[in-house]
Image 1 (cartoon, rainbow, N blue to C red):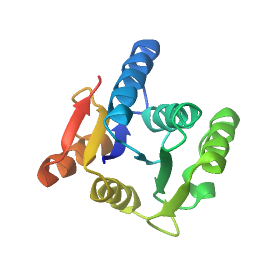
Image 2 (image 1 turned 90 degrees about the vertical axis):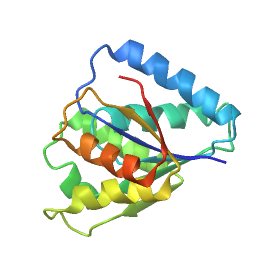
Image 3 (image 1 turned 90 degrees about the horizontal axis):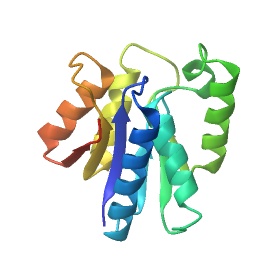
Length: 154
């Protein structure tokens, strides 16, 4: 049984193509026994993945969405627009579990979140375009060091 985490950039090029690739990969992995999916709650790819899992739960009720968040909801969404906050709240209310790596925003809360995502998983789905200095790059390096399977759908 696979436990899968997501990591990816906030900006997504060719949104419809990436969404289709993500859904195809999720269906394949669910059919191979994947049940637990871990998302970090960021705008962009994390949101796309969380929404995809929520939608797939209607077809595959055995799957679960787990959120691993870096800090309080208020601090995480402080600079987000109303639509992003509304989507985040919908994801939170649909999640099977929510875990916070820090009570408040601090310098390393994102790194702690990324490390926890990798720790919980034996597979990583990412949207990584090669920008090495990013949270996505950091998470992928952690996943590579752990030796887990990585699918890059960029």
